[in-house]
Length: 449
Image (cartoon, rainbow, N blue to C red; front, side, top):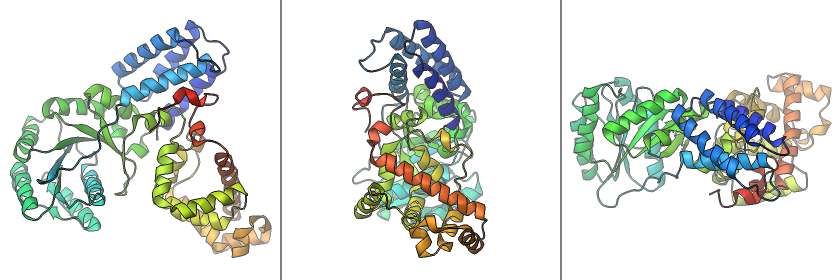
């Protein structure tokens, strides 16, 4: 996520940190490079211009804190301004008591509305609600079938009709929900261009007939400024309440995430970070700013871990890290749990300083399966003590896992690296790890949630 912009900004910050004293000239030179990096990341031009102006005013006139170099101070200012740019935190969904809560999704074709509708319904289900999915996308016949398949996976009913007008269909869906005790309704409307007056008028009629409690604009983060410009026009015509960015896991630039709030004035409520139905996360500006600046996102990583690992298991694992008794047996067990937390590429990007270092490393699901196969091909003694794996054992393990001796070597190398990283993390404050090199903890006190 955001690899290209993070890499560019890290290069600029390394140069700033290398200067013992910053003048107005080299501050402005550094910020010119920041501006170039942001524009290359497809951030809205006006947003970049305003951001650089604010940072320049603060950086040039700022008194340097004790024990903080001027370069670090500039990084801190940019961090704060990015949080303001993307914030404040959007309110999470609140559900009505009594009448059903109606959630209306709008957006362009192919932005991921149908999958997002199912993700929101799953979220409502986890809150003890009784959701109803409404297949209001009659423009694309496959959308109705797709929603039915997703609804079946989740055990959530789907309301649909053969033909008919979407405004009437949505109105009848609300009546159906009231009769059947369903208290959360998610309307999956058809994708459309904001210049199509007839279809935009249809959305306004749906809004009038169903009185949605929240309207969310769903946009594909990978389309950058196209998504932001569309969001601006949709908001002008429909007045939505917030945005959901989809496919954020595949967005290397970050233009949409950095621009949509500033351009529309509406917060990003949720982000889609994968195709699986549980991969919908609340959006936190401070965490996103931290990741963009290469500082990782320890808070989200910890939250994901807490959801996947029981407290007793985590304590036992921590003890093994501390006394350096971690084995491949433990590694295999943890790998099974990590798979529940999301794509490994995303998780590694949350570890401070690891985001750009993951470039070129294979961390796809196929690679995870290969790693599992190699470990499962080992006997118990080999998993407990990998140092006994010699050439003949390596060949046997490779044959048993349908891999090569090189793959076995790679796994052992990764395991040793992981042990080293975990040992380092166990002796370092997670918050300290979330800061750029050399930045005192006190600088960002109170900034994280």
